[in-house]
Image (tube, rainbow, N blue to C red; front, side):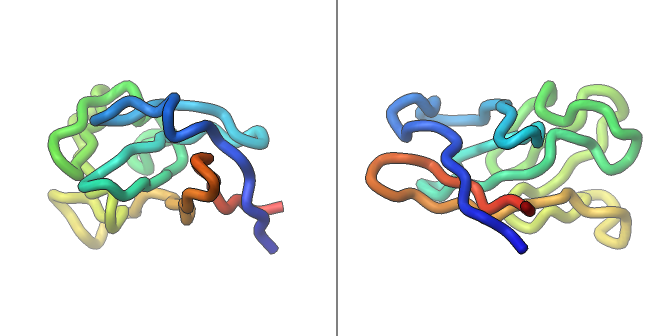
Length: 104
């Protein structure tokens, strides 16, 4: 079962790029791509390092530790689509607040 959890205000979110935060005990990378928000666990599936420390280039976030790149919209590894994907979570906006659907 999952529950929508308040993450932050849209006004607090950077105009471009990403931010890292903890919501209900889960470390997340939250980004805005073409006006839509996406959330993933702040863990690189390759080696468990903090993915949010990496750079964003459009919809792609690159792990700063080993260079693995992931598409935030799909969660897929750019170099090997059959490799482990990101753990992603649904995001919605309600009354100016960004909410993430997290397991309970």
